[in-house]
Image (tube, rainbow, N blue to C red; front, side, top):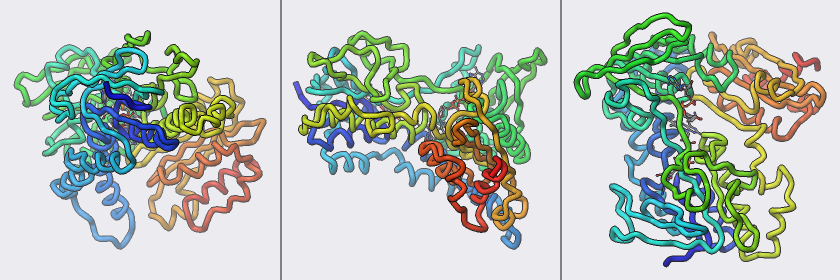
Amino acid sequence: MDTYDVIVIGAGPVGENAADRATRTGLSVAVVEAELVGGECSYWACIPSKTLLRPGAARAAAAAVPGVADPGPLDVDAVLAWRDERTGEGDDSGQEAWLDSVGITLLRGHGRLVGERVVEVTPALGVDDDADGQVRRLTARCAVVVATGSAPVLPGVPGLAEAEPWTSREATAVESVPDSLIVVGGGVVGCEMAQAYADLGSHVTLLARGTLLGGAEPFAGEAVAAALRDAGVDVRLGVETRAVTRPEPGGPVTVTVTDTDGGGPADVTAAELLVATGRRPRTGDVGLDTVGLDPAAALTVDDTTAVVGAAPDDQGRPWLYACGDVTGRAATTHQGKYEARVCGDVVATRFGHDGARATDVETAGDWSRYRATADHGARTQAVFTRPQVAWVGPTEAAARAAGKDVDVVTYELGDVAGAGVTSPDYAGRAQLIVDRERRVVVGATFVGPEAAEMLHAATIAVVGEVPLDRLWHAVPAFPTVSEVWLRLAESSGL
Ligand SMILES: Cc1cc2nc3c(=O)[nH]c(=O)nc-3n(C[C@H](O)[C@H](O)[C@H](O)COP(=O)(O)OP(=O)(O)OC[C@H]3O[C@@H](n4cnc5c(N)ncnc54)[C@H](O)[C@@H]3O)c2cc1C
Ligand SMILES: NC(=O)c1ccc[n+]([C@@H]2O[C@H](COP(=O)([O-])OP(=O)(O)OC[C@H]3O[C@@H](n4cnc5c(N)ncnc54)[C@H](O)[C@@H]3O)[C@@H](O)[C@H]2O)c1
């Protein structure tokens, strides 16, 4: 039996980071990966989707400025080639070399708990495993970290599974762009992919059962819906998908919808269908039942990333940890990697060779490196549509639902001097949610060109709980769009 101090199941961005931090006090760490080191994010999610979106954004930015020649349509082959270059065409040898360089052992195969601190690795389909097809048993002296990510959810619509729709994997790995595409789901994947495929020349129909980007402020989804329509996307809000038919495999596909208020039915036909109706934590085949946990549920963790409900080791220390999509806390790479840094540091300190510091974890405060506190009030998200949407902390509705007494301050980005010199038709909106009593920013949303780049200032204000009176002294440069901070402060009474 192979023994390591720490075993991480899943070498996505989150597992890699947890493993890296856990090595820092001298612990030996192995990661088990069933597919590609780098996970969903590197090959089928963040990186390919952003490379598919960036050329359209760059073209639009150029077209919005007087004096720049019409950039014309995108060169689709060149866009796909850039996507391939950025994703390494599914070659993870670079990431494998990085693991090696930081002293982490990679074991290829499917990892599954078979008891307390014992992990079985079985050969995974299509993976060149390290044990010649043999099952290996590994023991963790200290801790096991589950970082197995999430998988797309297909709703139980009649005919949908038989139609073999795309999930985000097929949409981001596409080799030729279909003439027309139906997207079911108005969340982040649905909106970003509708944008990308419209940019790439496909006729896109976006079917959303509610509004767009339901997790964001309503004005954000409204702005994205309007802009997608301007870009030629047929955006249908408030429609329920009832049935799907695809008579010939690979042939045209028809989706039957009804209005959620009772209208319809109506048919929409296209060359391809993408289903983007959410993801669920990948917990089903990780052996959670062998350690007394529910394999059908997300792995609930406390702020040290220890799994809630797992029995501690014989010294009373938590041995099972989880971070990233599998916890159901947040489903973004940056938030997952933040949890991974906390997880790795907790494990390294609790079990590391400098045992004298182990109590640091127990005595640490909320904003120490040993607590994933930002997961609660300071989660960030950026959506790379046009306009971009970026937010930190709760929306106004979520803040009020949580019983917070807040003021809401908004300002149109187009009215800021920096906007006028960025492009003549620059438009967007910034909104702050301000705790009325403490006069600190608890949430912020930006909608507009490159809004994602404006987010971090707000994140610092929220995490730092910077009072508005002090923010007043953070002077934005002229003429930048960030001058909106000054206008927002004025609007809040300064
Ligand atoms: C289309 C799309 C675009 C996205 N764009 C962004 C973006 O721009 N920015 C952003 O922050 N987030 C984005 N996300 C979300 C982001 O991809 C995820 O939050 C992130 O990948 C989560 O990382 P993870 O390591 O938890 O999981 P994953 O990236 O899913 O990695 C988990 C790894 O575990 C492996 N694994 C699973 N089970 C086992 C097992 N039993 N044994 C061994 N290995 C196993 C998997 O093979 C995988 O490599 C996007 C998601 C999608 C779908
Ligand atoms: N830029 C980014 O950070 C980025 C990009 C893409 C994805 N992601 C992450 O990936 C995760 C998954 O994205 P997603 O868009 O699949 O999920 P999501 O939860 O953001 O959106 C799913 C959408 O599908 C709708 N839906 C659910 N069931 C449906 C049904 N039966 N019929 C029609 N619509 C239905 C929901 O109402 C919702 O609007 C998100 O949590 C997101 O954080 C992040």
